[in-house]
Structure formats: C-alpha cells, structure tokens
Image (cartoon, rainbow, N blue to C red; front, top):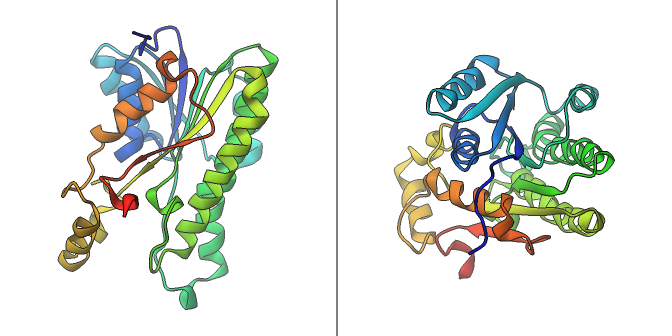
Length: 249
C-alpha cells in the first residue's frame, strides 16, 4: 500500500480561516504535514492554527492577500519551498447575466482565478529552484464541469481553473510537480449557508445530488490528503469531482 502520510512535507493553504479551507488545513496537519495558513483575516487563521497546534499538529498563520501579486511574490521570497499548495481562496456573486457589473467580474475572476494562477507560479518557481517535487491542488467546483443559472461568473472562473490546471500539469510534469483540481458540490459552509437557507433552493440542490445529501467539509479532507500524498503519485492534470452524482446525469 502506498503511503498517505505527509510527514516531512510543508503545505500552504489559502483561504484557510473557515469552511473548506479550515478543514483542508486540519486534514493536512492530521496527515503529518507542517501547514501554513494564509488569508486576509489574521484573527481567523490564527485561531485555526492554534487549534491545530493544540491538537498535536504543526501549523502557523500568515496574513496575506492572495490577490496582491507583489505581496505574493514577496511572501514566497521569504519562504523555503513548499511541497503542497492548496489554492482554496474564492468567492461567488450569483446574479443573472444582465445584472453583472464589471466590479463583480473583477472580484470573482481576480480571487478565484488570477490569484490561483500567480500563487501557483510563485510557489512552483521556488520549488523548481530548490529541486522540490510536490503537488498543486486547486479547489474548483462541480460548476467547473456544468453550467447553472445566475452563476456565469462563478462558472467562468471554475471552467478556466480546470483548463489552467491541465496546462499546469503539462508544464510542471518534467519537474516532478503534479497539478489537480477538486470539484465539490454544495458543501455546508459559512459561504453557502445563505443560499441553502432558502428551502426551495435547498430542495432543488438535493434533487441534483443523487446521493441525497449536502456535502460536508470532511468529504473534501480525504481527497486533499490523497492528492497531496505519494498515493496519488501518477495523478496529474485531472479533476476529482466530489458531487454526489450531480454531473453524472
């Protein structure tokens, strides 16, 4: 059996202060990785890092705005190479096409796509310069594989992420660096809660999820550990869709 252990690995998780990012950081730490949590809100990631440490894991918190490319470059210049990068920071502004503003477009595409691109660039430049192999993980969505009403911006960002991921995998394979996406369905998190509080919307979602339940953050943790570990050493350029059967139809 190949190893799922991440002992001796350094991992970096963006948007790690809550929801999926928090769970990912905890899962990587439980698998043995030394995890650095980054987000714009220092208090949130500091609380998560402290909880991981108190549970016996290794975690530190660093405030960083991943949409600020110069700040991202400066951050990686001060760090040893990471073995694992999880691009999790993201946002959503559900609106009909007719109501989307340029400010909406910039907010969603800059955080969901542009930040992931330049985080990956800075991280892999350091990995390559130090001869470190490893794994990039980009938190995409089932909406990177299908469409949905009122989600043109979100779908645009996640479909683009899926294509970006495949090209990254080809560029980086010769350096022993893998790149994959994880594409969840609706996961119960603070970001999704306002939408899921609408009973009609919730029932429509559950009809599409063939396993009949919403996703939980724990559903993402195992997938991240697998793709980050040597157990997935031949997996690159693909998407692990965790959607309860939504996209199978």
